Amino acid sequence: MYINRHFYLLPFLILFLFISCNDSDIGPKPLPDNYEQLHQEWLDYRISVLTDTTGWLRLQNLIWFDEGPNSFGSGENQDIQFPEGSIAENAGTFILDDGSVTMVVNNGINVRHEGESVDTLKMVGDDIEERIHATHGPLTWFIDKRGDQRGVKVFSMDTPKADRFDGFPMYPIQQEWYHNALFVPHEEETNIEIVNVLGEVVDRYSPGRVEFQINGERYSLDAFESSSGLFLMFSDATSKTETYQAGRYMIVPPPGDDGFLILDFNKAYNPPCAYNPFTTCQLPPSQNRLDVAIPAGEKRPVEWEGI
Image (cartoon, rainbow, N blue to C red):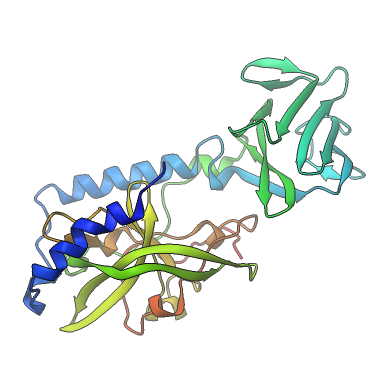
């Protein structure tokens, strides 16, 4: 969805000219009476997303193509190796042609798209806007793009560990980490350099920062756009000991007419690179690496291999 950035910022810029925020206006606030229920609903939703057909916990592999034909199947000699026993040893070919990807399926292999059996399927091209999924038994796959690279992400519903998943280790819910915070728009359009776990750098638009207090000291996090509010990436002192070393993420609701929003660190969550090696998570910018401990939200995953 396109967001007119100047339109998005205008009411908050005007508001900030008139609002006077005292330190007493921000900081911990009482939990809602039904907070435990709301938090459980958030956790149930997170579990359902992670364990969905193409959830991160079911991602089995990400393999990049070479230009031209790339054979695929479960055999060891295939260019693109699917999980052992999940499909025929030689199931077909992916053809990468100047950024476009077409899948050609061998005779007798039941590969489907939208419920229909296919023998040839164009999965990426200038004329294709949506993500094309193909399936075989418990497997689902689609083509991933990273710059000029093209590759296939393979997921499997036959993942017992994902079936048993009921959440990552978490700190207990704590009222002191449920904060009233202030959104402060940047005075001019701001793009921030963001590095991912592979060392790749992109510029990402930031509409403003979120200011809050811990133990009477004021802190802020630069925020990024999200379809459901504001997206925060941060690390803190617990990253050295108990939480994921590279940091955690949060989605917070958009600010109200008064510029304030709820910053609930009890919902700080792990990025996918904390528990799946086939990911390219973005890392918090230097200004979002806090020197204070925030012992709230998800802890470092156990029994899951990350980066």
